[in-house]
Length: 128
Image 1 (tube, rainbow, N blue to C red):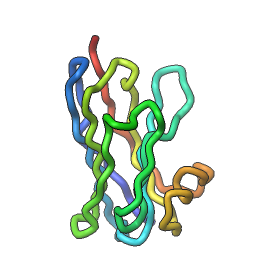
Image 2: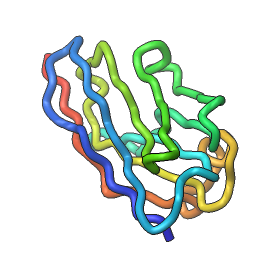
Image 3: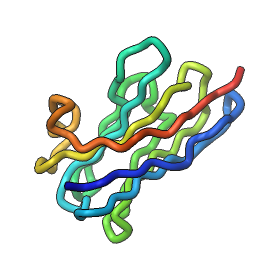
């Protein structure tokens, strides 16, 4: 069982940037796909971005395309989410999630939540 810990959240003004990190322990992330999700107050959790095991394939929800970049460093057992040009509507708790066995984008985007390992989340607040 892999344990995921997110960090890097905080308070930022509209137009600012943050870089979230997801570090893993207990098992290597190097062979599975990983994604970021978010949940705003009063809303359901939604998909944000995903990256395949090797890092060569990424996928984003439309609302963050061109502003957010997901990347990974398998040597450091970590995945990152660079968030630029942040907007108030990006305010949410951001969660890292790793596939239990799959290595493709679909293993994140189409997986039932129970099929993923989840971190505890990190709060991102964008002030207007």
